[in-house]
Length: 136
Ligand SMILES: [Zn+2]
Image (cartoon, rainbow, N blue to C red):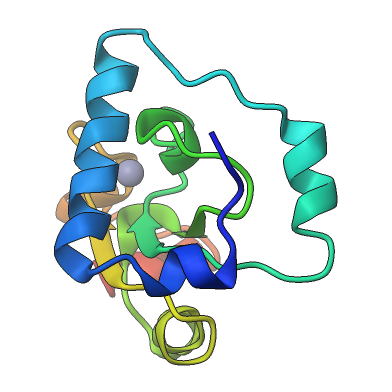
């Protein structure tokens, strides 16, 4: 799998970006991940990046988007926060990913058995987590 270049990114439509993620998830579900040379991708992206997607997901250890969508270095912007909430910092990151860096799609990825959602439903209050859960 090739590392995305500016030209490759420019040729991807939003519909194609969604399809790339669906295909990657299908590979993940079937345990058929693409063989990537991540060190080579790290070197190839050292001077710039051209990810095709911005994905907002939870910090949950089971929802690593690069793994569950079978993507490599430089393919997606991964924005992670408990409960995949939106705030100005997250929106600014998404705007950077799309308007500045050229990503074609934004995905908000929730998941089952989310501790943040459960905490918000249970009205958990604990340090800084209280403010975060009020946004869920
Ligand atoms: Zn979660």
